[in-house]
Length: 392
Image (cartoon, rainbow, N blue to C red; front, side):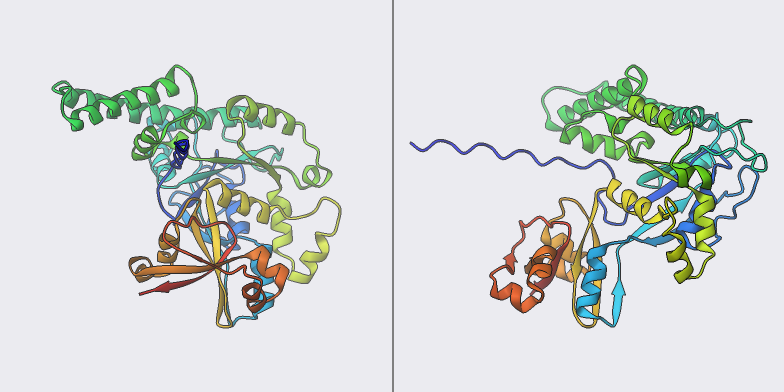
Protein backbone atom coordinates (compact mmCIF):
# COMPACT_ATOMS: atom_id res chain seq x y z
CA UNK A 1 0.00 0.00 0.00
CA UNK A 2 1.55 3.34 -1.04
CA UNK A 3 2.43 5.70 1.81
CA UNK A 4 -0.03 8.49 2.50
CA UNK A 5 0.93 11.88 1.14
CA UNK A 6 1.99 14.33 3.82
CA UNK A 7 -0.73 16.89 4.45
CA UNK A 8 0.03 20.20 2.73
CA UNK A 9 1.07 22.89 5.18
CA UNK A 10 -1.77 25.28 5.94
CA UNK A 11 -1.26 28.57 4.14
CA UNK A 12 -0.68 31.40 6.61
CA UNK A 13 -3.31 34.14 6.57
CA UNK A 14 -1.76 37.63 6.44
CA UNK A 15 -2.35 40.19 9.15
CA UNK A 16 -4.30 43.22 7.92
CA UNK A 17 -7.09 44.02 5.48
CA UNK A 18 -7.51 41.52 2.62
CA UNK A 19 -7.14 44.19 -0.06
CA UNK A 20 -4.77 45.28 -2.82
CA UNK A 21 -5.51 48.97 -2.15
CA UNK A 22 -3.54 49.38 1.05
CA UNK A 23 -2.33 52.65 2.56
CA UNK A 24 0.61 53.62 4.73
CA UNK A 25 0.43 56.48 7.25
CA UNK A 26 3.26 58.81 8.30
CA UNK A 27 3.22 58.92 12.10
CA UNK A 28 5.32 60.68 14.72
CA UNK A 29 5.37 63.38 17.38
CA UNK A 30 4.85 66.99 16.22
CA UNK A 31 7.82 68.73 14.56
CA UNK A 32 9.89 65.64 13.79
CA UNK A 33 9.75 66.28 10.01
CA UNK A 34 6.63 64.28 9.03
CA UNK A 35 4.99 66.85 6.78
CA UNK A 36 8.30 67.96 5.25
CA UNK A 37 9.02 64.28 4.52
CA UNK A 38 5.55 63.85 3.00
CA UNK A 39 6.10 66.92 0.83
CA UNK A 40 9.39 65.70 -0.66
CA UNK A 41 8.05 62.15 -0.99
CA UNK A 42 4.96 63.32 -2.88
CA UNK A 43 6.68 66.31 -4.54
CA UNK A 44 3.99 68.65 -3.14
CA UNK A 45 3.45 70.99 -0.21
CA UNK A 46 0.07 69.49 0.75
CA UNK A 47 1.31 68.73 4.26
CA UNK A 48 1.56 72.39 5.38
CA UNK A 49 4.95 71.98 7.07
CA UNK A 50 5.08 74.45 9.95
CA UNK A 51 7.00 74.94 13.16
CA UNK A 52 4.14 74.34 15.59
CA UNK A 53 2.23 71.28 16.80
CA UNK A 54 -0.88 70.19 14.86
CA UNK A 55 0.05 72.03 11.63
CA UNK A 56 -1.48 68.96 9.96
CA UNK A 57 -5.00 68.15 11.17
CA UNK A 58 -6.79 66.48 8.26
CA UNK A 59 -4.68 63.70 6.78
CA UNK A 60 -3.26 64.47 3.33
CA UNK A 61 -2.97 61.68 0.77
CA UNK A 62 -0.64 61.09 -2.18
CA UNK A 63 0.19 58.20 -4.54
CA UNK A 64 3.93 57.64 -4.71
CA UNK A 65 5.49 55.70 -7.64
CA UNK A 66 7.47 52.69 -6.38
CA UNK A 67 10.89 52.53 -8.06
CA UNK A 68 11.53 49.25 -9.89
CA UNK A 69 14.45 48.49 -12.24
CA UNK A 70 12.35 45.69 -13.82
CA UNK A 71 9.63 48.16 -14.83
CA UNK A 72 12.23 50.52 -16.32
CA UNK A 73 13.77 47.64 -18.34
CA UNK A 74 10.35 46.54 -19.64
CA UNK A 75 9.60 50.12 -20.76
CA UNK A 76 12.94 50.20 -22.62
CA UNK A 77 12.08 46.88 -24.31
CA UNK A 78 8.48 47.62 -25.36
CA UNK A 79 8.77 51.44 -25.76
CA UNK A 80 5.04 51.78 -24.91
CA UNK A 81 2.85 54.84 -25.44
CA UNK A 82 1.79 54.68 -21.76
CA UNK A 83 3.88 53.75 -18.69
CA UNK A 84 2.14 53.10 -15.35
CA UNK A 85 4.36 52.03 -12.42
CA UNK A 86 3.20 50.54 -9.12
CA UNK A 87 2.11 53.11 -6.54
CA UNK A 88 2.18 53.33 -2.76
CA UNK A 89 -0.65 55.38 -1.21
CA UNK A 90 0.85 57.52 1.54
CA UNK A 91 -1.00 59.60 4.13
CA UNK A 92 0.38 62.43 6.30
CA UNK A 93 -1.22 62.16 9.75
CA UNK A 94 -1.26 64.80 12.52
CA UNK A 95 1.43 64.66 15.21
CA UNK A 96 0.74 62.50 18.23
CA UNK A 97 1.48 63.60 21.80
CA UNK A 98 1.62 61.83 25.15
CA UNK A 99 -1.96 61.24 26.34
CA UNK A 100 -3.37 60.83 22.83
CA UNK A 101 -5.07 57.57 23.82
CA UNK A 102 -7.20 59.53 26.31
CA UNK A 103 -7.92 62.31 23.79
CA UNK A 104 -5.08 64.77 24.59
CA UNK A 105 -4.14 67.12 21.75
CA UNK A 106 -5.81 65.78 18.63
CA UNK A 107 -5.57 62.28 20.11
CA UNK A 108 -8.88 60.77 19.10
CA UNK A 109 -8.76 62.14 15.53
CA UNK A 110 -5.13 61.09 15.20
CA UNK A 111 -5.78 57.52 16.32
CA UNK A 112 -8.81 57.15 14.07
CA UNK A 113 -6.61 58.21 11.13
CA UNK A 114 -3.99 55.61 12.15
CA UNK A 115 -6.73 52.97 12.37
CA UNK A 116 -7.73 53.78 8.77
CA UNK A 117 -4.27 52.98 7.33
CA UNK A 118 -2.67 49.56 6.90
CA UNK A 119 0.96 50.27 7.80
CA UNK A 120 3.03 52.95 9.50
CA UNK A 121 6.07 55.03 8.59
CA UNK A 122 7.18 56.19 12.03
CA UNK A 123 9.35 59.31 11.68
CA UNK A 124 11.80 59.67 14.57
CA UNK A 125 13.71 62.92 15.12
CA UNK A 126 17.43 62.54 15.76
CA UNK A 127 18.61 66.05 14.80
CA UNK A 128 19.15 69.13 16.97
CA UNK A 129 17.83 72.45 15.71
CA UNK A 130 17.07 75.33 18.08
CA UNK A 131 14.74 76.83 15.46
CA UNK A 132 12.50 73.74 15.32
CA UNK A 133 10.80 73.33 18.70
CA UNK A 134 10.25 69.84 20.14
CA UNK A 135 6.89 69.25 21.80
CA UNK A 136 8.63 67.43 24.70
CA UNK A 137 11.24 70.19 25.13
CA UNK A 138 14.37 68.34 24.01
CA UNK A 139 15.44 65.76 21.42
CA UNK A 140 15.25 62.18 22.72
CA UNK A 141 14.23 59.62 20.05
CA UNK A 142 13.96 56.74 22.54
CA UNK A 143 11.45 58.66 24.65
CA UNK A 144 9.52 59.63 21.50
CA UNK A 145 9.35 56.01 20.30
CA UNK A 146 8.24 54.92 23.77
CA UNK A 147 5.46 57.55 23.74
CA UNK A 148 4.10 56.38 20.38
CA UNK A 149 4.29 52.69 21.26
CA UNK A 150 2.56 53.35 24.61
CA UNK A 151 -0.25 55.44 23.08
CA UNK A 152 -0.97 52.92 20.31
CA UNK A 153 -0.94 50.06 22.80
CA UNK A 154 -3.17 51.87 25.33
CA UNK A 155 -5.74 52.59 22.62
CA UNK A 156 -5.67 48.91 21.59
CA UNK A 157 -6.14 47.82 25.22
CA UNK A 158 -9.16 50.12 25.56
CA UNK A 159 -10.58 48.86 22.22
CA UNK A 160 -10.06 45.17 23.13
CA UNK A 161 -11.52 45.66 26.66
CA UNK A 162 -14.74 47.09 25.20
CA UNK A 163 -14.98 44.31 22.63
CA UNK A 164 -14.32 41.63 25.25
CA UNK A 165 -16.98 43.05 27.59
CA UNK A 166 -19.53 42.94 24.78
CA UNK A 167 -18.60 39.36 23.87
CA UNK A 168 -18.80 38.18 27.48
CA UNK A 169 -22.22 39.80 28.00
CA UNK A 170 -23.64 37.98 24.99
CA UNK A 171 -21.62 34.85 25.81
CA UNK A 172 -23.24 34.05 29.16
CA UNK A 173 -26.03 32.08 27.49
CA UNK A 174 -23.73 30.07 25.20
CA UNK A 175 -24.08 26.29 25.22
CA UNK A 176 -21.70 23.55 24.10
CA UNK A 177 -23.67 21.91 21.35
CA UNK A 178 -24.09 24.28 18.38
CA UNK A 179 -21.20 25.13 16.07
CA UNK A 180 -22.10 28.83 16.34
CA UNK A 181 -21.76 28.72 20.14
CA UNK A 182 -18.41 26.93 19.89
CA UNK A 183 -17.16 29.50 17.37
CA UNK A 184 -18.23 32.34 19.68
CA UNK A 185 -16.38 30.72 22.61
CA UNK A 186 -13.25 30.40 20.46
CA UNK A 187 -13.54 34.09 19.54
CA UNK A 188 -13.79 35.05 23.23
CA UNK A 189 -10.70 32.94 24.00
CA UNK A 190 -8.76 34.64 21.17
CA UNK A 191 -9.73 38.14 22.30
CA UNK A 192 -8.64 37.22 25.84
CA UNK A 193 -5.31 36.04 24.40
CA UNK A 194 -4.92 39.37 22.54
CA UNK A 195 -5.70 41.27 25.76
CA UNK A 196 -3.09 39.25 27.66
CA UNK A 197 -0.48 39.91 24.94
CA UNK A 198 -1.06 43.67 25.20
CA UNK A 199 -1.28 43.93 29.00
CA UNK A 200 0.62 41.10 30.68
CA UNK A 201 3.19 40.29 27.98
CA UNK A 202 3.57 43.95 26.93
CA UNK A 203 3.81 43.04 23.25
CA UNK A 204 2.52 44.65 20.08
CA UNK A 205 -0.05 42.37 18.42
CA UNK A 206 2.01 41.97 15.23
CA UNK A 207 4.89 40.51 17.28
CA UNK A 208 2.84 37.57 18.63
CA UNK A 209 2.33 34.13 17.09
CA UNK A 210 -1.25 33.59 15.87
CA UNK A 211 -2.85 30.71 14.00
CA UNK A 212 -5.12 31.37 11.03
CA UNK A 213 -8.37 31.37 13.03
CA UNK A 214 -6.87 33.82 15.52
CA UNK A 215 -5.58 36.08 12.73
CA UNK A 216 -9.14 36.38 11.40
CA UNK A 217 -10.22 37.68 14.83
CA UNK A 218 -7.19 40.01 15.06
CA UNK A 219 -7.97 41.40 11.59
CA UNK A 220 -11.62 42.03 12.51
CA UNK A 221 -10.49 44.31 15.36
CA UNK A 222 -8.31 46.62 13.15
CA UNK A 223 -5.80 47.04 15.98
CA UNK A 224 -3.16 49.77 15.84
CA UNK A 225 -0.31 47.54 17.06
CA UNK A 226 -1.11 44.90 14.42
CA UNK A 227 0.06 47.29 11.66
CA UNK A 228 3.62 46.90 10.33
CA UNK A 229 6.00 49.73 11.27
CA UNK A 230 9.01 51.03 9.34
CA UNK A 231 11.13 53.36 11.48
CA UNK A 232 12.48 56.39 9.57
CA UNK A 233 15.20 58.22 11.53
CA UNK A 234 15.41 61.87 10.47
CA UNK A 235 19.04 63.05 10.73
CA UNK A 236 20.71 66.35 9.98
CA UNK A 237 22.18 66.48 6.49
CA UNK A 238 25.70 66.49 7.98
CA UNK A 239 25.06 63.34 10.07
CA UNK A 240 23.36 61.53 7.19
CA UNK A 241 26.23 62.17 4.77
CA UNK A 242 28.93 61.11 7.25
CA UNK A 243 26.73 58.18 8.44
CA UNK A 244 27.27 59.04 12.10
CA UNK A 245 24.77 60.05 14.77
CA UNK A 246 24.85 59.57 18.54
CA UNK A 247 21.31 58.16 18.58
CA UNK A 248 21.38 55.59 15.76
CA UNK A 249 22.86 52.64 17.69
CA UNK A 250 20.52 53.36 20.63
CA UNK A 251 17.48 53.48 18.33
CA UNK A 252 18.53 50.17 16.73
CA UNK A 253 18.92 48.70 20.23
CA UNK A 254 15.45 49.93 21.25
CA UNK A 255 13.87 48.35 18.14
CA UNK A 256 15.74 45.05 18.69
CA UNK A 257 14.47 44.94 22.28
CA UNK A 258 10.87 46.09 21.78
CA UNK A 259 9.99 45.24 18.16
CA UNK A 260 12.69 42.93 16.75
CA UNK A 261 12.72 42.65 12.98
CA UNK A 262 11.12 46.02 12.25
CA UNK A 263 13.12 47.88 9.57
CA UNK A 264 15.06 51.06 10.37
CA UNK A 265 16.03 53.51 7.60
CA UNK A 266 18.13 56.63 8.35
CA UNK A 267 17.40 59.59 6.08
CA UNK A 268 17.60 63.39 6.11
CA UNK A 269 14.61 65.59 5.32
CA UNK A 270 16.90 68.61 4.93
CA UNK A 271 18.99 66.78 2.28
CA UNK A 272 15.84 65.55 0.50
CA UNK A 273 14.44 69.10 0.47
CA UNK A 274 17.68 70.45 -1.01
CA UNK A 275 17.77 67.74 -3.68
CA UNK A 276 14.09 68.28 -4.53
CA UNK A 277 14.74 71.92 -5.44
CA UNK A 278 17.42 71.02 -8.03
CA UNK A 279 16.73 70.35 -11.73
CA UNK A 280 16.92 66.64 -12.65
CA UNK A 281 20.44 66.75 -14.11
CA UNK A 282 21.84 68.71 -11.13
CA UNK A 283 20.07 66.38 -8.68
CA UNK A 284 21.73 63.35 -10.28
CA UNK A 285 25.10 65.12 -10.12
CA UNK A 286 24.62 66.13 -6.46
CA UNK A 287 23.90 62.51 -5.49
CA UNK A 288 27.30 61.42 -6.81
CA UNK A 289 28.82 63.09 -3.73
CA UNK A 290 29.80 60.47 -1.09
CA UNK A 291 26.85 59.72 1.23
CA UNK A 292 24.50 62.23 -0.42
CA UNK A 293 22.11 59.74 -2.07
CA UNK A 294 18.37 60.22 -1.62
CA UNK A 295 16.69 57.56 0.54
CA UNK A 296 13.17 58.16 -0.81
CA UNK A 297 13.18 55.22 -3.24
CA UNK A 298 14.42 52.86 -0.54
CA UNK A 299 11.75 54.15 1.88
CA UNK A 300 8.93 53.77 -0.68
CA UNK A 301 10.00 50.21 -1.50
CA UNK A 302 10.26 49.33 2.22
CA UNK A 303 6.72 50.62 2.84
CA UNK A 304 5.36 48.68 -0.14
CA UNK A 305 7.06 45.46 1.06
CA UNK A 306 5.92 45.96 4.67
CA UNK A 307 2.29 45.72 3.47
CA UNK A 308 3.06 42.33 1.80
CA UNK A 309 2.46 43.90 -1.60
CA UNK A 310 3.94 42.54 -4.84
CA UNK A 311 3.35 43.45 -8.49
CA UNK A 312 2.91 41.74 -11.80
CA UNK A 313 3.24 43.35 -15.23
CA UNK A 314 1.17 43.58 -18.39
CA UNK A 315 3.26 44.59 -21.39
CA UNK A 316 2.71 45.70 -24.97
CA UNK A 317 3.33 48.59 -27.38
CA UNK A 318 0.32 50.49 -25.99
CA UNK A 319 1.15 50.19 -22.29
CA UNK A 320 3.54 48.70 -19.78
CA UNK A 321 1.84 48.61 -16.41
CA UNK A 322 2.61 47.28 -12.92
CA UNK A 323 -0.42 45.92 -11.05
CA UNK A 324 -0.29 45.81 -7.25
CA UNK A 325 -1.55 42.69 -5.47
CA UNK A 326 -0.94 41.12 -2.06
CA UNK A 327 1.35 38.14 -1.58
CA UNK A 328 -0.57 34.88 -2.02
CA UNK A 329 -3.05 36.28 -4.59
CA UNK A 330 -4.31 33.63 -7.03
CA UNK A 331 -4.40 34.22 -10.80
CA UNK A 332 -8.17 34.97 -11.13
CA UNK A 333 -8.07 37.60 -8.37
CA UNK A 334 -4.89 39.11 -9.87
CA UNK A 335 -6.69 39.39 -13.23
CA UNK A 336 -9.66 40.95 -11.41
CA UNK A 337 -7.48 43.91 -10.38
CA UNK A 338 -7.61 44.99 -14.04
CA UNK A 339 -11.35 44.34 -14.49
CA UNK A 340 -13.90 42.27 -12.55
CA UNK A 341 -14.90 40.47 -15.79
CA UNK A 342 -11.38 39.03 -16.04
CA UNK A 343 -11.94 37.38 -12.65
CA UNK A 344 -15.58 36.33 -13.15
CA UNK A 345 -14.96 34.84 -16.62
CA UNK A 346 -11.39 33.69 -16.00
CA UNK A 347 -10.10 30.94 -18.33
CA UNK A 348 -6.34 30.99 -17.81
CA UNK A 349 -3.26 33.18 -17.76
CA UNK A 350 -0.23 33.03 -20.03
CA UNK A 351 2.63 33.74 -17.64
CA UNK A 352 6.36 34.28 -18.06
CA UNK A 353 8.84 35.44 -15.49
CA UNK A 354 10.66 38.75 -15.81
CA UNK A 355 13.96 36.84 -15.51
CA UNK A 356 13.09 34.59 -18.49
CA UNK A 357 12.12 37.55 -20.66
CA UNK A 358 15.31 39.40 -19.75
CA UNK A 359 17.42 36.31 -20.47
CA UNK A 360 15.80 35.51 -23.84
CA UNK A 361 15.27 39.12 -24.95
CA UNK A 362 11.80 38.81 -26.54
CA UNK A 363 8.42 37.17 -26.02
CA UNK A 364 8.92 35.04 -29.14
CA UNK A 365 12.21 33.71 -27.77
CA UNK A 366 10.62 32.96 -24.39
CA UNK A 367 7.86 31.01 -26.14
CA UNK A 368 10.35 29.16 -28.36
CA UNK A 369 12.32 28.24 -25.24
CA UNK A 370 9.22 26.67 -23.68
CA UNK A 371 9.15 29.22 -20.86
CA UNK A 372 5.67 30.69 -21.51
CA UNK A 373 3.33 28.80 -19.18
CA UNK A 374 -0.45 28.47 -19.14
CA UNK A 375 -1.69 28.78 -15.57
CA UNK A 376 -5.17 28.07 -14.22
CA UNK A 377 -7.21 29.17 -11.23
CA UNK A 378 -5.01 27.60 -8.51
CA UNK A 379 -1.84 29.47 -9.63
CA UNK A 380 -0.39 31.80 -7.01
CA UNK A 381 1.18 34.91 -8.53
CA UNK A 382 4.89 35.56 -8.06
CA UNK A 383 6.40 39.04 -7.79
CA UNK A 384 7.59 40.10 -11.26
CA UNK A 385 5.34 37.77 -13.29
CA UNK A 386 4.39 39.05 -16.76
CA UNK A 387 0.79 38.04 -17.51
CA UNK A 388 -1.68 37.90 -20.40
CA UNK A 389 -5.18 36.94 -19.30
CA UNK A 390 -7.75 34.91 -21.20
CA UNK A 391 -11.40 35.22 -20.18
CA UNK A 392 -14.63 33.81 -21.59
